[in-house]
Length: 80
Image 1 (spheres, rainbow, N blue to C red):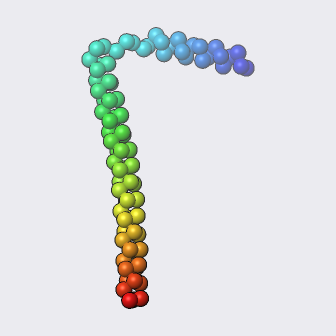
Image 2 (image 1 turned 180 degrees about the vertical axis):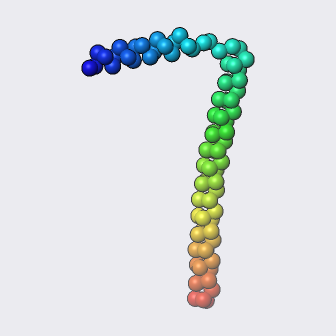
Image 3 (image 1 turned 135 degrees about the horizontal axis):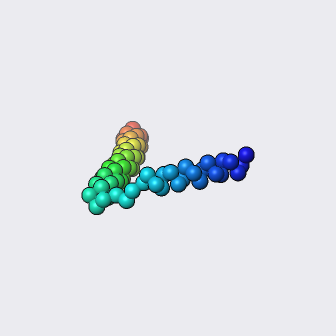
């Protein structure tokens, strides 16, 4: 059973290699450009999501600090 599957796999590999051809220079550059653009787009999206995450964290912390400072100032004004 395993030997039969191995033979079928080798036969399929041989069939693929017979059909496959080396890409032309133009095909290669087209594939390279599309792949590069895809990598840049995904990287830019990741960078923007990371930047948005960091900015929202900074804004949240800033608002919390401002609220705490206002509460402390309000409490100090009431004590005087």
